[in-house]
Picture 1 (tube, rainbow, N blue to C red):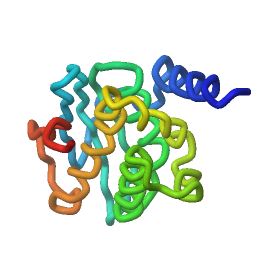
Picture 2 (picture 1 turned 45 degrees about the vertical axis):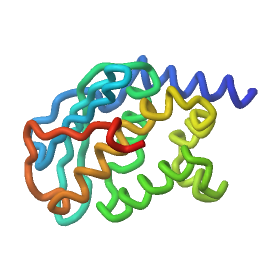
Picture 3 (picture 1 turned 180 degrees about the horizontal axis):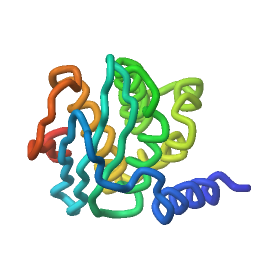
Picture 4 (picture 1 turned 135 degrees about the vertical axis):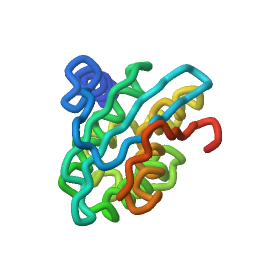
Length: 158
């Protein structure tokens, strides 16, 4: 299977059949992420217990890339320590900027399929929306407070 075909298949599967697209009752932290340049909008919900991401979900709307990326991200970080999730956020952001090693990209599992988005500048903010939202959540109070209606905008993070 050609790489571009695999990318489309993974992206389509996460967009059409998302595993984590639902509001979460009992989230310990939630944050709205917005990409004002195209209108993508998500609310990310996490349950953090003893420094570990024990569950996560999202709601929102946007393009296939933004929705599939956040679904892939949650597949990857649920069950991990918050610090490990932050490390994966860093790898993803460096991958999108063209600065992650092949070994690091392999750690991203299916999210590594979004590597080619780095060649599509208009789509980068779509792909990173969920990751930036997650990063902001985990860095604010260690993910220990509910942020309610707070939001993070991808326009502020070029």
